Image (cartoon, rainbow over all chains, first blue to last red; front, side, top):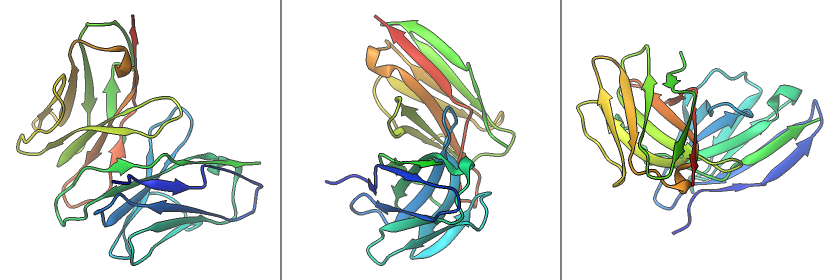
Length: 115
Length: 110
Protein backbone atom coordinates (compact mmCIF):
# COMPACT_ATOMS: atom_id res chain seq x y z
CA UNK A 1 0.00 0.00 0.00
CA UNK A 2 1.70 3.15 -1.23
CA UNK A 3 1.80 6.02 1.20
CA UNK A 4 1.75 9.69 0.34
CA UNK A 5 4.29 10.60 -2.31
CA UNK A 6 5.63 14.01 -3.27
CA UNK A 7 7.83 15.29 -6.04
CA UNK A 8 10.36 16.65 -6.44
CA UNK A 9 12.35 15.97 -3.28
CA UNK A 10 14.42 19.12 -3.56
CA UNK A 11 14.10 22.23 -5.66
CA UNK A 12 16.19 25.37 -6.06
CA UNK A 13 14.64 28.48 -7.61
CA UNK A 14 15.46 32.16 -7.82
CA UNK A 15 13.34 35.07 -6.65
CA UNK A 16 10.45 35.90 -8.97
CA UNK A 17 10.22 32.44 -10.48
CA UNK A 18 7.26 30.12 -10.27
CA UNK A 19 7.23 26.56 -8.88
CA UNK A 20 4.87 23.58 -9.00
CA UNK A 21 4.96 20.84 -6.37
CA UNK A 22 3.10 17.55 -6.72
CA UNK A 23 1.44 15.16 -4.32
CA UNK A 24 -0.23 11.76 -4.64
CA UNK A 25 -2.38 10.81 -1.66
CA UNK A 26 -2.41 7.52 0.17
CA UNK A 27 -4.50 4.86 -1.51
CA UNK A 28 -8.16 5.29 -0.58
CA UNK A 29 -7.79 8.91 0.51
CA UNK A 30 -9.61 11.70 -1.28
CA UNK A 31 -8.46 14.82 0.58
CA UNK A 32 -5.15 16.62 0.28
CA UNK A 33 -3.85 19.35 2.57
CA UNK A 34 -0.71 21.40 1.97
CA UNK A 35 1.54 22.77 4.69
CA UNK A 36 4.61 25.00 4.76
CA UNK A 37 7.21 24.24 7.41
CA UNK A 38 10.01 26.71 8.01
CA UNK A 39 13.15 25.50 9.75
CA UNK A 40 12.55 24.93 13.46
CA UNK A 41 8.83 25.69 13.20
CA UNK A 42 5.67 23.61 13.09
CA UNK A 43 3.78 23.08 9.83
CA UNK A 44 1.57 26.00 8.72
CA UNK A 45 -1.69 25.15 6.93
CA UNK A 46 -1.83 26.51 3.37
CA UNK A 47 -5.05 24.97 2.05
CA UNK A 48 -7.05 21.77 1.67
CA UNK A 49 -8.56 20.23 -1.45
CA UNK A 50 -11.56 17.94 -1.51
CA UNK A 51 -13.58 16.88 -4.56
CA UNK A 52 -11.33 19.03 -6.73
CA UNK A 53 -12.26 22.19 -4.85
CA UNK A 54 -10.36 24.29 -2.33
CA UNK A 55 -12.32 23.56 0.84
CA UNK A 56 -10.39 25.70 3.30
CA UNK A 57 -7.49 28.12 3.15
CA UNK A 58 -4.96 29.33 5.68
CA UNK A 59 -3.34 32.76 5.91
CA UNK A 60 -1.31 32.61 2.73
CA UNK A 61 -1.33 35.13 -0.14
CA UNK A 62 -2.89 34.46 -3.51
CA UNK A 63 0.57 33.68 -4.86
CA UNK A 64 -0.10 30.25 -3.41
CA UNK A 65 -2.62 28.30 -5.44
CA UNK A 66 -3.47 24.69 -5.96
CA UNK A 67 -5.36 22.12 -7.88
CA UNK A 68 -6.76 18.66 -7.31
CA UNK A 69 -7.22 16.20 -10.12
CA UNK A 70 -9.96 13.55 -10.54
CA UNK A 71 -7.53 10.88 -9.28
CA UNK A 72 -7.18 12.95 -6.05
CA UNK A 73 -3.57 13.91 -6.71
CA UNK A 74 -2.78 17.56 -6.15
CA UNK A 75 -0.45 20.36 -7.14
CA UNK A 76 0.74 23.38 -5.21
CA UNK A 77 1.79 26.38 -7.28
CA UNK A 78 3.71 29.33 -5.93
CA UNK A 79 4.19 32.41 -8.11
CA UNK A 80 6.63 35.29 -7.78
CA UNK A 81 8.83 33.43 -5.33
CA UNK A 82 10.29 35.31 -2.37
CA UNK A 83 13.29 34.39 -0.24
CA UNK A 84 10.84 33.76 2.62
CA UNK A 85 9.15 31.00 0.65
CA UNK A 86 12.15 28.77 1.31
CA UNK A 87 10.78 25.92 3.42
CA UNK A 88 9.77 22.28 3.51
CA UNK A 89 6.41 21.86 1.80
CA UNK A 90 4.39 18.98 3.14
CA UNK A 91 1.39 17.29 1.66
CA UNK A 92 -0.99 15.35 3.90
CA UNK A 93 -3.79 13.06 2.79
CA UNK A 94 -6.91 11.98 4.63
CA UNK A 95 -10.49 10.85 4.13
CA UNK A 96 -12.72 13.86 3.65
CA UNK A 97 -15.74 12.78 5.63
CA UNK A 98 -17.83 15.84 6.35
CA UNK A 99 -17.63 16.91 9.97
CA UNK A 100 -15.21 14.16 10.87
CA UNK A 101 -11.55 15.11 11.21
CA UNK A 102 -9.63 12.04 10.22
CA UNK A 103 -6.02 11.02 10.50
CA UNK A 104 -3.69 12.91 8.22
CA UNK A 105 -0.74 11.06 6.74
CA UNK A 106 2.17 13.23 5.62
CA UNK A 107 4.35 12.75 2.59
CA UNK A 108 8.15 13.11 2.76
CA UNK A 109 7.98 16.75 1.68
CA UNK A 110 9.63 18.93 -0.94
CA UNK A 111 12.50 21.12 0.23
CA UNK A 112 12.28 24.42 -1.67
CA UNK A 113 15.20 26.82 -1.61
CA UNK A 114 14.75 30.29 -3.08
CA UNK A 115 17.95 32.18 -3.91
CA UNK B 1 -3.70 31.54 17.73
CA UNK B 2 -1.03 28.84 17.81
CA UNK B 3 -1.40 26.22 20.58
CA UNK B 4 1.36 26.39 23.18
CA UNK B 5 3.25 23.24 24.03
CA UNK B 6 5.19 22.56 27.21
CA UNK B 7 7.90 21.80 27.92
CA UNK B 8 9.81 23.27 24.99
CA UNK B 9 12.47 20.60 25.35
CA UNK B 10 13.09 17.55 27.50
CA UNK B 11 15.94 15.06 27.91
CA UNK B 12 15.24 11.57 29.22
CA UNK B 13 17.11 8.38 29.94
CA UNK B 14 15.84 5.18 28.34
CA UNK B 15 12.97 3.76 30.34
CA UNK B 16 11.87 7.09 31.83
CA UNK B 17 8.42 8.58 31.27
CA UNK B 18 7.49 11.96 29.83
CA UNK B 19 4.41 14.15 29.52
CA UNK B 20 3.95 16.76 26.81
CA UNK B 21 1.15 19.30 27.07
CA UNK B 22 -0.70 21.25 24.39
CA UNK B 23 -2.89 24.20 25.36
CA UNK B 24 -5.22 26.13 23.10
CA UNK B 25 -7.14 29.37 23.60
CA UNK B 26 -9.92 28.10 21.34
CA UNK B 27 -12.60 25.45 21.86
CA UNK B 28 -11.20 22.35 20.23
CA UNK B 29 -12.96 19.61 18.33
CA UNK B 30 -9.96 17.37 17.82
CA UNK B 31 -6.28 17.08 18.60
CA UNK B 32 -3.68 15.15 16.62
CA UNK B 33 -0.22 14.30 17.89
CA UNK B 34 2.77 13.84 15.60
CA UNK B 35 6.44 13.03 16.01
CA UNK B 36 8.94 14.46 13.56
CA UNK B 37 12.55 13.41 13.28
CA UNK B 38 15.11 15.75 11.83
CA UNK B 39 14.78 16.04 8.06
CA UNK B 40 11.72 13.80 7.93
CA UNK B 41 7.97 14.31 7.66
CA UNK B 42 5.72 14.28 10.74
CA UNK B 43 4.44 10.81 11.66
CA UNK B 44 0.94 10.41 13.07
CA UNK B 45 0.76 9.10 16.65
CA UNK B 46 -2.66 9.78 18.08
CA UNK B 47 -6.01 11.43 17.48
CA UNK B 48 -8.33 12.63 20.21
CA UNK B 49 -11.85 13.78 19.54
CA UNK B 50 -14.19 15.91 21.61
CA UNK B 51 -16.16 13.51 23.76
CA UNK B 52 -13.17 11.52 24.90
CA UNK B 53 -12.65 9.02 22.11
CA UNK B 54 -9.01 8.08 21.94
CA UNK B 55 -6.86 6.17 19.51
CA UNK B 56 -3.16 5.43 19.57
CA UNK B 57 -0.38 3.07 20.44
CA UNK B 58 0.52 0.87 23.40
CA UNK B 59 3.20 2.83 25.22
CA UNK B 60 1.99 6.20 24.00
CA UNK B 61 -1.32 7.50 25.25
CA UNK B 62 -3.06 10.84 25.49
CA UNK B 63 -5.83 12.71 27.17
CA UNK B 64 -8.08 15.59 26.13
CA UNK B 65 -9.45 17.97 28.74
CA UNK B 66 -12.31 19.78 26.99
CA UNK B 67 -12.88 22.21 29.85
CA UNK B 68 -9.28 23.41 29.78
CA UNK B 69 -8.82 22.98 25.99
CA UNK B 70 -5.71 21.05 26.78
CA UNK B 71 -4.29 17.76 25.59
CA UNK B 72 -1.46 15.78 27.11
CA UNK B 73 0.68 13.11 25.47
CA UNK B 74 2.09 10.42 27.74
CA UNK B 75 5.22 8.52 26.74
CA UNK B 76 5.99 5.57 28.99
CA UNK B 77 9.20 3.56 29.24
CA UNK B 78 10.84 5.77 26.62
CA UNK B 79 13.03 4.25 23.95
CA UNK B 80 15.81 5.81 21.88
CA UNK B 81 13.42 5.82 18.92
CA UNK B 82 11.15 8.27 20.77
CA UNK B 83 13.62 11.09 20.15
CA UNK B 84 12.31 13.83 17.91
CA UNK B 85 10.08 16.88 17.95
CA UNK B 86 6.49 16.37 19.01
CA UNK B 87 3.72 18.55 17.62
CA UNK B 88 0.07 18.76 18.47
CA UNK B 89 -2.28 19.70 15.65
CA UNK B 90 -5.59 21.19 16.71
CA UNK B 91 -8.89 21.75 14.91
CA UNK B 92 -12.02 23.58 15.94
CA UNK B 93 -15.54 22.47 15.09
CA UNK B 94 -16.66 23.20 11.53
CA UNK B 95 -13.15 23.64 10.18
CA UNK B 96 -10.83 21.43 8.21
CA UNK B 97 -7.79 23.51 9.13
CA UNK B 98 -5.25 22.10 11.56
CA UNK B 99 -3.10 24.51 13.55
CA UNK B 100 0.12 23.03 14.84
CA UNK B 101 1.58 23.79 18.24
CA UNK B 102 4.94 25.29 19.10
CA UNK B 103 6.61 21.88 19.32
CA UNK B 104 8.47 19.95 22.03
CA UNK B 105 11.95 18.62 21.38
CA UNK B 106 12.51 15.31 23.14
CA UNK B 107 15.82 13.47 23.35
CA UNK B 108 16.21 10.04 24.85
CA UNK B 109 19.69 9.04 25.99
CA UNK B 110 20.99 5.51 26.43
